[in-house]
Image: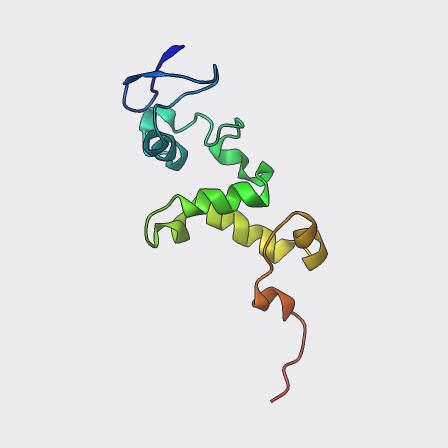
Length: 114
């Protein structure tokens, strides 16, 4: 089925009826919110809005962070949400949800002998 890309406006042959973008490049651009018209549109295909990052899985947060070029990820809303969870949740909760546990989290509350 023919569809029109929401980012660049190009017509493309969609495999699924839910397809919104003609390429990975346009999908990433929409995900990052670089198109002001899509700012309040879903950030990921599952339909989660920018302000609903708390509903993203660990995998979705890591994937979102990986779409940023160079060190731009550090200021991303996905990174902010990841850090919030790492600080607030227990190691057990994080592992259960599929998060990678950083060493600083494992060392919290432990005394370091020199």
